[in-house]
Amino acid sequence: MTPPGTESQTRKIILTGLWRDNPIFKQVLGICSTLAVTNLVLNTIVMCVALVFTVALSSASVSLLRSITPRNIRMMVETLIIAFYVIIVDILLKAYWPEMSANLGPYVGLIITNCILIGRCEAFGNSNPPARAFLDGAFSALGYSFILLIIATFREVLGMGTFAGLAVPFFSGPAWDKWIIMVMPPGAFFMLAIVVWVFRWIQQSREEAKK
Amino acid sequence: MREKRWFPILYMFLVTAFFSSIIIGFASVTRGRVEANEELAFERAVLEVVPGVSGANLSNAEVHPRFAEMVEEPTASSGGAYLVKRDGHIVAYALPFSGQGFWAPIGGILGIEADRKTVTGIAFYEQNETPGLGAEIVKPPFRNQFKGKVLATQGKPLGMKRPGAELDDSTVHAITGATQTSTRLDVIINVALTEWQSKVGKEGTRS
Image (tube, rainbow over all chains, first blue to last red; front, top):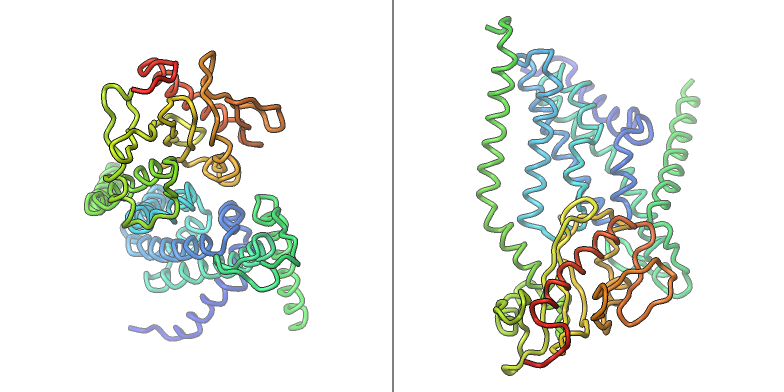
């Protein structure tokens, strides 16, 4: 069943999602949630897990239905499938982790409007087999996740002196004057801009080195 | 069949029915847990305003026994407020309030001492305001302001003033950058308090 060249294809999907077409620093998608949930590392981790789950499964589901879905209503179907998985995540959090559900507030529901989801469903799930769509969704979301974790780590350590709630030596001590602005909304803009800048610079200099 | 004009409609209908029924099933399976969590949040909020009990520090398992031990359901004479008792005496009233916030409903508890005018604290069991702005109402800097305030008998029982304004015994500072949340909360609290005062009488008399 395995078509020839699958291995390199898999590798390509992984690299594209994580690096070449990274949703944050290359495509600049899903920025709203990036700004919103990165003030604390723990919130970010939960958001990222939720996103990996929803992107991978919704893209795979769209792919499963792709041959029978009429083209003119495919966006409606995609949105419906995305909403379905997001509501599942929301219910799970409300039932089993109410504190986290309260922390993330409206942002779980807002995953529905995260452009990465509809982007992957449209660009990949719609025209590729389910397993590959799943992989592509998962790695796009992981590409989003690792950038978010970098931003969240800087914001929480500089702003609160903690990492995922645990005190970090030096930064939690009296010698460090906590940069409260980092955990407030403006801090997200600063960190996001710096991270996008640094990663684009790395990407560009690597491409130039290849030439 | 796929070329028929009605096919997309039928297809959308079937897909929607399929996914919706899974969600409905899933939601009804977890409903018990979700409701238990909401009840726990409510009971914890009540305990948070009871003087001498640090409701925020209780573990989830401790909340309900403590609530059952100290708190009694509202009676006709308590004006809708829960009664907090210790050794048979009323030590405080826990008045629930709720209403529409900026984004979603806000629900909370206001603790009032047995004298029926001194506020013991405020706690929230439900809110979905903007994180970092309106949601600051659940943080100690805002909530601690209420402790020790005295309900006014003239005009609004509890006033909210813009940050930096001079305060008196029955006013607190609103939240910077969250005018909508603050003004709505002001209305919600005062509607509940005014109604409660009209039921139990304005002047604090021990019953």
